[in-house]
Amino acid sequence: MSNLLPGSPFRRESVGRGRVVALAAVLAVGLVVGGCATGTGVDGPSSGSGASGSGGGPPDPSLDAYDFRAPLTLQGVPDGATVRVVLNHATLVADGKALADGNDVRIVFFDDGGSATELNRVLDRASAWDSTNTNLFFRALPAPAPSGVYYVYYGNPTPAAPVADPLQVFDYWDDFDTLEENWGLDLIGPATGDVSLVSGAVRVAGVAGDIGGAADDCILFARDLSGDFLIEARIAGVGGSL
Image (cartoon, rainbow, N blue to C red; front, side, top):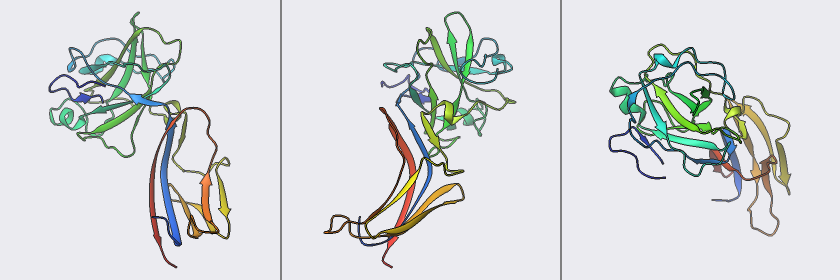
């Protein structure tokens, strides 16, 4: 991915014996590639009529309510891939061009015929709005994708709720509000432990031995996935002797 125009708010972009507790808050799986905003008019006025929801979500009331849009140039991105876009949202907020809570940020695809589709976009859980390093994900249109341009829209003081369904952005998504049956816990050797949900995180706790020793014992919490993918997960772990 190449650098962007100067001033643009966008850019491309110990194992040991004892007690182990791991907390996983979110797991996202998909083919993630970089998206970048390049070209002229990066901070130009918006134009176009309301976006349709085909492939993305319900219709947007009107794109005319947005003051700004920036084109995204996707280079070498397969149809249907999950795309990461990094933007300096704090600069847009400080300049009065975007809302601090990000509710006015939209990803919209315009085909060459002028039809617009608003796409689901998801904020990276490790990121934040009103940051110099705000990370968003969206999914490129599936094959056969029409010819057109992706845009980031912003600058609407009274926006409707954005379409932001992670299941439409990633091949697999789990925020662990519930624990689905495809996950399984394996206690290998004399290891002991259990899995529970705690405040929106899955908690794996137990006692395992010295991995790599003569008689390995460990705790494995896993599920099957297939195909080519990249996994992003938020995990915290603590350990100590009992």
